[in-house]
Length: 534
Image 1 (cartoon, rainbow, N blue to C red):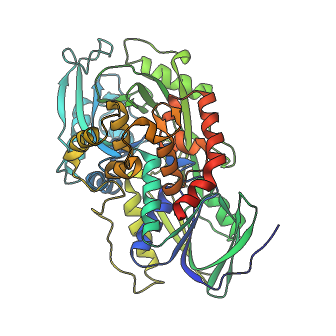
Image 2 (image 1 turned 180 degrees about the horizontal axis):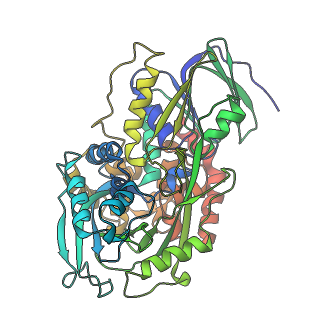
Image 3 (image 1 turned 90 degrees about the vertical axis):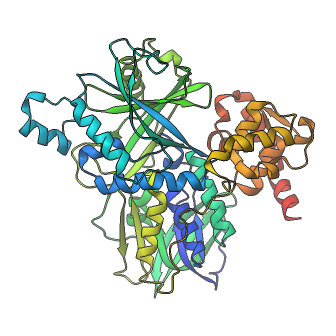
């Protein structure tokens, strides 16, 4: 296979991994004046970062593990991030039905403490403790935009209508939704706008220290060409493969390790009519969410199961699917079955191995470890939550400052991502303006485009005055103009990139339609890029 000469240009940072942590770090670093190259062996957000439960949340259940710092940081971040991306993130209300049979997960510190001081509870979650937890949740993060917790009478009102009659009382609190894979792409785009180089479908095959630099060998998986990039510092944000990079690519002896935890979700047709989410607590101490999804569906998840090998594609097993179905059926009046499941997805969380006894108990906090014993430094990134990705990136830059002493100050808080330069309260106004400027769009089509692209919807649609001006129609209101935009600006290469990560139109397109889209993209990809360059 051909090999290029080592570039004479030396980059400040080389980032391995195009998930939310890698792209968030690349954006932050580029905005501070560092030269950055990022390599992702597949598409952006192709693994963990597109398989989350799609929430910006503090992690209410983590309070049971006394992870107060993590929860507080995440709660503060909710509103910081909401302001920066009001097109792909929005507030949601969560309904937590209460009944006396709710129990703690047995290994939590809270459960162990109450078993000692209040043994008569026998592992149950008392109502007063849930309310105290929600009080903390309301106040730890300096909440300003989101409304506080309230009590709901489920015997009246839409919240109780789909639930079993035994549930008469609930607590309602605030968190936020996030389009997770679009968040990754927008961070990558902003990194590029600030000078970073983002390379998708580019695999790191080897990295070695040569003097005070890293020499990183990369392979373009489309052409099989290889080249070497030199960098002053390496960031290992490879997600589930972080351990593989440490031991196989960098060949570093390290006691730090990753714990892979699989989280699976199921999607069903819409199970209720209101726009609130449910937080369900099980008799086994676990929790799941039931969330309005893509207008016509309900998302249910997640599970926690150890996953041994990152090279094994995570899938929702029949056992996990049935677990989620049975869990939800304990709450909903109308039972669902496997026949109601229209889609499943599963992701692997690369958690820091803290020796926890169960996958559920493993810490969701992030851990950053620098190794510079052999010369040039490498920063290994373990764990983290999508909600705290921006703070993780800032912490990574705090570590990097020892090697780049002139590094400028933090800057990302409050700086909008592409398309997010409008007020949180102005979303409906932007939808209305889009309808006025492009009256040929159906309301659902226009709203979807504003949700995806925010103020950049004008660039996606351009001067179009009819659907015909948008070019080839692929189905589900997806047209050539939008696909070309995604190719030129958002690193899209295949139909899967478009219908499962840049959007969720795969839920609405047939297999034949997706195949036709893939054929079109394969045929026109190079021409679209050449036209853009011209």
